[in-house]
Length: 204
Image (cartoon, rainbow, N blue to C red; front, side, top):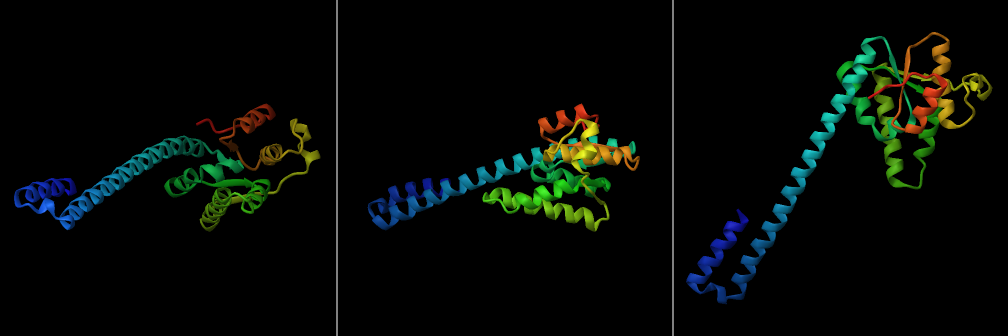
């Protein structure tokens, strides 16, 4: 629309002699600049919406796998990185099929440390992760699990690193026969450690 007005102004200005007037030229070029800015904003908005729609489709597909596991009696036990980087998947699963969330206190402690990070983005992600945890708590779907001592998880071939303590927490709960837990993590290293220790994981 702005481009059409610009061309129309040039034509009218040429026919009437207004193109010789500085004020008219400024108006015409002002319209052109506004049109270019508007076109850029529309293109950016369209690209953002396309990325958002694509991301939501990915989340919906991943949630289907989680729902299938839950329907078979399994429960999801999360790694810290899921809450930091894929919290939208957790919220979607809570809203769509009332997913239960099992979380080691080691995860909680790691998030508590990350919210004090010098990196603003890391702090923001950690704070949002606590918002997500609170949503599960309000829905009575949050299960916070005590982290076992290092000597209690050595029998699984694990030691005292944060990843191993998180995995050890869930193995300890499985051994007690309380839950059929599945480990959800987007960290390949953590998944390798989990498989090696005999911890079932979510395969998405």
